Image (cartoon, rainbow, N blue to C red; front, top):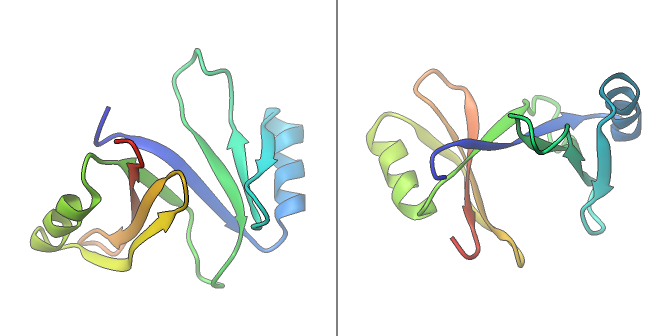
Length: 120
């Protein structure tokens, strides 16, 4: 289960318009997470291969789409990232009641996330 891409995030300037697009074209469903401008996206039938993700309001004009990889230990994986030529760009942060998230760049500068489940 660990070390697989499990979640994507699509940052956008107009989340409602983006969600409407994905609903109309691909029949995705969305549910807002708390009070944040963050909506979970169910991208298809769970019996077929694929992952779900989210649409979110951009926090930065250059914010890219990000895929997150589930890991057993976010701290150990962050150390491996740095020792292997990557860079931590947003340190470990708690998602209350759910788990921890951290963003990093690979040696080519692409941004990714690592995710540790609360009960993982």
